[in-house]
Length: 415
Ligand SMILES: NC(=O)c1ccc[n+]([C@@H]2O[C@H](COP(=O)([O-])OP(=O)(O)OC[C@H]3O[C@@H](n4cnc5c(N)ncnc54)[C@H](O)[C@@H]3O)[C@@H](O)[C@H]2O)c1
Image (cartoon, rainbow, N blue to C red; front, side, top):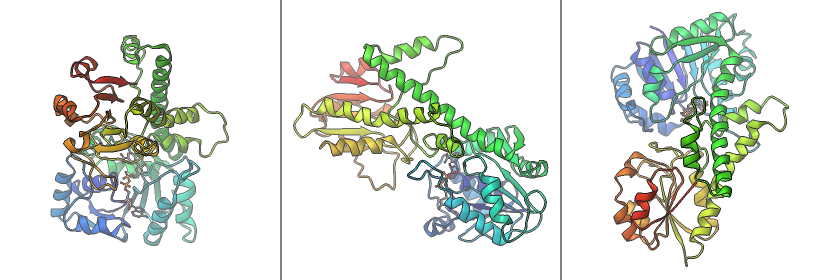
């Protein structure tokens, strides 16, 4: 039975490790965070994701999955560690570098190393490959297999999509691509396409950059529509009736671990200036500031204004607040002397001060609907309005029906 070490027990590494364990491999999950390892060792999860509990407990109970702070000798190593942006909008590859150094201590001839962390083109070959070669004389493609396999899963649907999405596998050579394919084939029901290293790295970045650019277009249109006094929702509805047009919805900015970051990775190793990609990043980054200004103007007429944010996560139906533009809006409003309370039943383990629904809206002057969680459909807006001091709703996701909200006595504002 093949043994696989997965480095990084986060949103990607942990579900992947469970899938592999349930597909018959002996899997060792590794993380540098002792708290995570202790929690997993006690049979508990440290992240919330539908279906994860089920595949984790099955892998754990069958002793197919163990977790540890240190890697061991294995047949396959999968790297799923963070690749954040640094303050210069460059990839911080320090976690990848540290993972590659750990693998180097354990690697044997014939092993397979797969990088899954989203990375600038060239990272697998020039960073991971070179670290392993340096001092060992292990050459990728000759002594061991090296591949990149991007992750395309959607938070909130990770387990389902891990199994069902199509995958791209890029190898340093054909044998490496095929070796990686043979691992994913054991649990992936989607198609697996083989290509080279740099193409697979670029494909992942192109996918998220495509989304970022399209969101920026919708956001820019919404701002221009306001100048003309036109309702962007009507524009999108009618424009999308054209068979070849699909404009996305505007929003209060782009958050999460991927879309605000990956476009910068595309630009990392090119000298191109004045790119569409960078302009779109700027448009999307400006949205939370623009919205904060608009909200400050609406509540500016009240004494000691209070704003309630409904939904603090970066998107609907998840509890993940990484890169959430709601954080910027919260900070900007507070800087302007506006009191902010936050209601988000999906967000747990956060340093931000969250309130229960009633408490959050008591004496409030405006509700900002930031993330459109399905559970918010059950909120009784009549009771909410009774608790508020002034009845204003800023609907940053076109979540509420404008006329319904207005009938309840709210002033409705939106993008
Ligand atoms: N979360 C997503 O939806 C998603 C989707 C597609 C791609 N990705 C990419 O996958 C990668 C991992 O993302 P994630 O969301 O799982 O991150 P995460 O922060 O949830 O988990 C990463 C884990 O790696 C651990 N770690 C850091 N350095 C390590 C090391 N040297 N050895 C072992 N463990 C180490 C951290 O402690 C952390 O627990 C990133 O590159 C991300 O961009 C994520």
